[in-house]
Image (cartoon, rainbow, N blue to C red; front, side, top):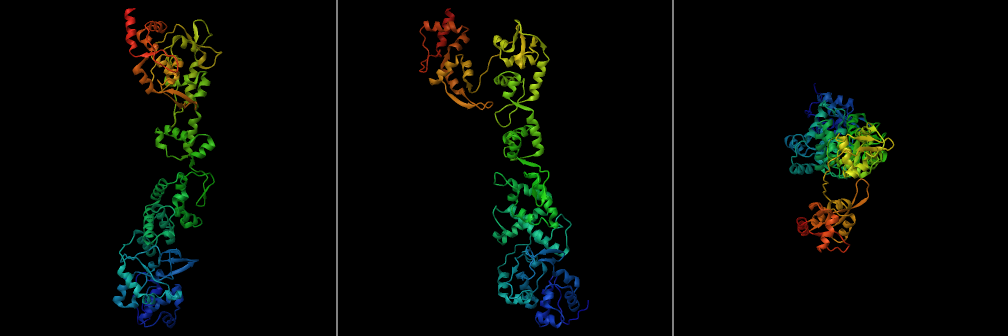
Length: 603
């Protein structure tokens, strides 16, 4: 293209038309407004990038119209500009601003004089904070008294040359961030064929900045609180996540969720400014892909009520529900839900101790499993036996049981039904002299009821019938000729008063007197099945007692002498029992065993 002007200048790559005209006017020893008037141009319309003015300038200076138009920033809507091959609003792009690289300007002045100062389009894009060539921070000059004077970059540089020179000397090379490079390429070449293509420069700016704040800054920090370095660091951090794709974004949002200091995290708080910005763009189709990604993440990771709106979309099928809400709706507490879920997943309940929400799918599985369980008391009623005997049946593996993060035990209804079905299969008979009820047989044979039932279930008892007039296991009839081998009871841990009496072979009354006399120690514990407090004799105090003392019943068993005969024999020998202020107890010092041994030898 042949220029009509005698004195022209080369057009810098992506230089704004206003910058180019300002340089041309100085080249022709004029000022911008007069220069434009002399050539049939209008300076305000050059600043506003009117197409007819750019076409006229192209003809006069011999510069490509396409190059001028690409570097122009034409207003295409309220506060919205076309910036190269992209778009931006005034929040991210300032056309009526002089923003320059101080080192580029100093180099240009030293090479060709002050009239060679220039301004590329990308320097007016606010999230681009450094020069591509020198890597130093861009410098924004004070605005002139009138907007059209501010467009005259040569005049602005001349007016503020001392400020520019000082900045050029003091500037630190920060290097170009990947985000700045990406924006520059979007301006010059257009979309990058990635999932961010629908976003304009302003969207990219706000998305990178607010996401970076959510993942790199403390809660409660606002955009207005950021300094130059913090803002640039946040944009870089946010962009590094965004450019890696939707899964990287979800992963980073998940990390932010897990690091929430709140006992009950919420997505608006966890995402902070990022969510606030996205919510402001609900009506903007350009952010639809990004919003859909965040909506999906929120639905998958946060408890929501049906019908809740997230970024403008109504959630019809939320995935999660809080454990507190599950308790309100279904009556199953948090600990129980965690425990059952851990059981279903073959995990330890402690692995889910921090779980605050549960998926509806998992909750259905938990409720289904829970509906098939019953507590000890209900099981005892159904089997027509005592709750203590239900626990004994559990210990003998006749019934299954589960614990879910607490000491409470629950029996599967199927396990109870299996036992009752087996009971229904027994032959029907009436009680007779040779057929004893289960409780009577247990008492006479001195074999625990649960042990008798276990032997019947295992097939070791054959003479078994069922009384149809008596419900549950209490209706079992057993041939008195059936003989079961007695099993030795094994005691361990803290014992109830009755079990302590059985271990020491004395009465419960004697156990209380030894307790009150200071020989045994007692503590109260909550029974996990009944939630009532019970008294237990500590294992340590029982062991300490047996190290120094022995009861009449223990010696009678050891030396196979009836206690009713051994007691008077010791009295005749004037063997004294241990002193007990709470009352008389047939307990003796351990040395008494030698006396009994002599009695057996002498007898």
